[in-house]
Length: 359
Image 1 (cartoon, helix red, strand yellow):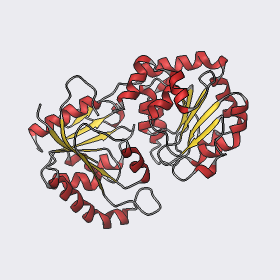
Image 2 (cartoon, one colour):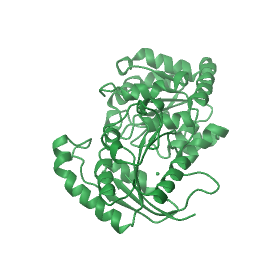
Image 3 (cartoon, helix red, strand yellow):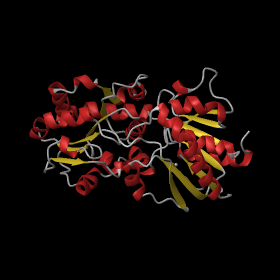
Image 4 (cartoon, helix red, strand yellow):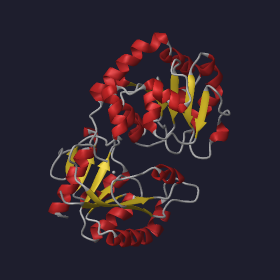
């Protein structure tokens, strides 16, 4: 097949996927992105291009900052797209998708958007009329008229290493050993998202003694620069800023305690890993709760306000011998709810766009 030059604002696993000729990755410049991309090794030449829109303290830019920074970001994206002779762009949502997509469209390049949340994000809503494909992980984000020539319902692309766990279950003992945990004891993996979650950090800080005292080991992702919010790591508690690779943590876990971010839940579902989900409570559209609800009985949804001693007791019960049957039922439910990995499907659609062009 022809080699494709792709701009990404993604991973295929099949016998004969399209061959990437060149990859350009647009990012916001967050430290966590640097960490993830340190181990990124695609089978083609690639370059990272930072679109400087994020404020100094992190997080999404205000509308004013976005408006002021947008012209420069578009120019930078246009220059990079030209230098790489990019032929198609995939936007993953978030504020960096806006200048990248506008730059691509100004150059006449086809654009696809990937929406893996259960509600459409601002980037998807704003850019959908301008692009050639919108990939939806869930039917709830499809327009009222349903799928058409632009909109496709697929699923969320996940790492092949995570997908494999849902097929063969992996080797828990080996994964525990690699992480420094005892495979004969339960392991609670806490994932607060790439930036960490203050309420999850406080919960583990306040109830770590009750959890570890009951024989539970804890691997806690606290977020960049937030290790001081938790007790120091010890034999039964490991506190890290970022879990990498997440596939190993999911392979070793008995139970996951996490936020309801779409990527996290896609990996939980693909790995068939039972989880207690604490949706972030301050999003107006409550998309993290809706993300979790799509996984049905495979997860337990707990309000952020219920991070208390009762929940700690429930986690102890789920991780103990009496919780084995419940965890097995949750894993089975995830096998039914998880729609599978869409990485190859997205890549094939992008290849199609390079043939048909921007119409």
